Length: 265
Image (tube, rainbow, N blue to C red; front, side, top):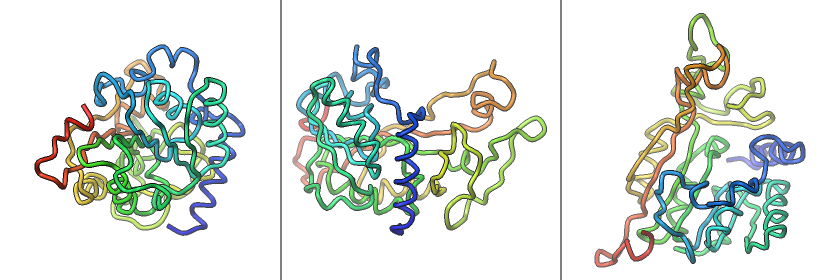
């Protein structure tokens, strides 16, 4: 990805953080009642992550890092936005949590050691890079054999589909096989203003994970459909196309005799 793309997306997220946009709001007090359940409602990470090394990738904003740290993990958060990372440091200070912050693009993590993390968590953000392959390869490099990679992505179908209803439903506007960033659109819950976003096909998302050395163990489409939602709203559109997909993948062990359950349970 070009430096210009990174710079534009960093500026856009800096602006979102400064105006406290919905996706740039730190964790709330009630989120800390059971921090692990808040960030892992499906229980993919097991009963405890106490003492685990966790990478929160492209996950600035004072939510992910703080909650994983409150759950007992040793947390590193990487983000491209200065302002989003400032929120992580602010929340960590306020709640007396140990969080390491690093400003970098998700595609290149030379400051992180091989097999440094037991768990990598990656909220929706792969849409901001032109190619996901380099991201997955870096995650595979820094995640230990048997470790988990939990990532969430914007559904390619959702990025193809118009934001506004046409007739009784929604229509595809973008080609599935395409190059370059998506056209700019009005701000919405589905598209962040000022950012450059890219559509990634399923073969790039799921196939890319496998080619990088991960085994996919589970996949869900978080439910946002609302049968009572007003026509044209986020909940209404989600009845026609799932906006996101969440993937649980495990890094394959290079040592056949290694017990992966000894790393992450």
